[in-house]
Amino acid sequence: MNFAPTLFGWFIEKTFFSLLLGNLGQSKKLNNFDIHSCFCPQTIITFLITFGIWKIVLIMSKKVLMVCLGNICRSPLAEGILKSKVGEDAIVDSAGTAGYHVGHLPDERSIEVAKLNDVDITNQRARRISPSDFEEYDYIYAMDEENYNNLIAMAKNDTQRSKVRMIMNELYPNENIDVPDPYYGGDNGFKNVYKMLDQATDKILEKL
Ligand code: 4NP
Image (cartoon, rainbow, N blue to C red):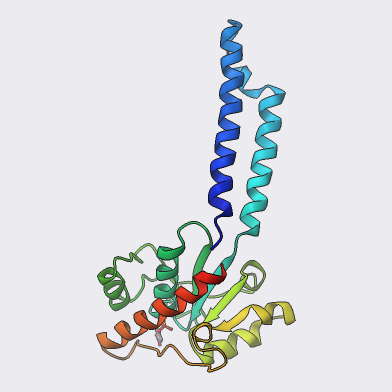
């Protein structure tokens, strides 16, 4: 698990604010405190350096994209479950290969099964995968073989293709097991999807 962003965030906050307060305190002691002391060269340089480091750390942290067909059943669950485990140590999002449900909330059965497990996915809205996702994300997890094949067809080069994986291969390498599409089924399909994704995201967590 990647703790770097959290630790760096703490370090940067401490460094920056202690220097800023130090500058202000110094000005106060000299009886010439005014707002312009916030913008002295020392403070500005500290600001630029610390936020530069912060940006680099953010870029270094892993980005994961979960992908299914409609982005309303499986991938929102995968996103929500992984986020609930990883906190802010990685960037996690989800998308669909089709655009039927763009802008929609996750399916109410996904929301329900997530809620039963204390995971809230109601802040998510469906979107369609875009070519820039293949640049932006480090791992692109397909929920099933059909979506995997569509993603591979969309990827522009070997680097982009190497990011695309079948999510259940994290647990069962090379077996290419699908997370079954629960859209036309009953609630049990959603419970099964949740269980599979819970196990797969535990494995993903080990490599972030
Ligand atoms: P998902 O499920 O790919 O897991 O979001 C589906 C959602 C909608 C449809 C198919 C699958 N649909 O045909 O509208």
